Image 1 (cartoon, helix red, strand yellow):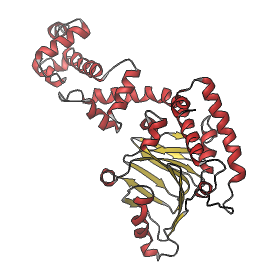
Image 2 (cartoon, helix red, strand yellow):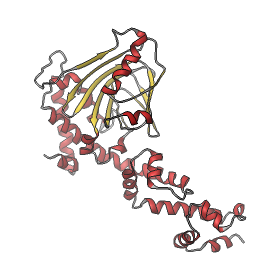
Image 3 (spheres, rainbow, N blue to C red):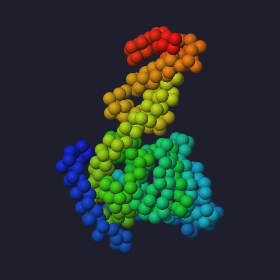
Length: 351
């Protein structure tokens, strides 16, 4: 079946994907034996450890290889004196699978780090040990053993007071967009291990270790495509739940900033840390658009000022400017169209 067919299929395709996912997990489990590696794939297992490095130099050594293994992260704090990292990685088709065990820490990927990154990718995290926290695009969360998290390119913070042990799948952006039309919407969303889709995704990702990638029970591309198909089905369910929340966040941000006469959709998208196309998609799902939301917000501000006794000393041009309208004529037309009354009519309601 073609990828687009798997991604867009209806109920039969959805049920088939879940059945195949469960069958995949059953197929993976008996073969995941790190002690019996086969090099039939032609891939190699990359290993990294700070154990042999003097403690005073371990963190610097880790920073020197971090951008090659995951992505650029330069702000770190709460680093213990005996800081240590154990990392293994291997290619799994177009993805990279990493097994990481790292000491307690707190780290933040900054805007500067983003500018230095040459590769754009998404990361799927599954913890197999201590709980840890994160902040991404205004979303704060905490992951327990087995929970799934996807982080996108963007500023984010990880808080690991007990360290982190788990599996990370590094997914190129192009691959992710093959299966998810708007993967940004899932960035920062936690998928509990005991939720409907968590029961499917968590065990599959946990089994996709670097050792597993060297001796897969099925061709690597089959496994990678199956993961993509399941992510696509999960996204279909999740988008229906996430879109209303995003739409309300967009409207709230517009209301807060509508007094800026030069406000654009790109400004709001930047403030919410989402791509403009996702903003437009969210509003279209609500049968709206940015221009309509912006005019509605400005009219609401204007009506509030025109009908407030506290603002009765303000002139109509001042109210127009305060509301974000670029001209008195536009101000009058918008009020008449949205409320059925002109500015003077609304002001006279005070007397």
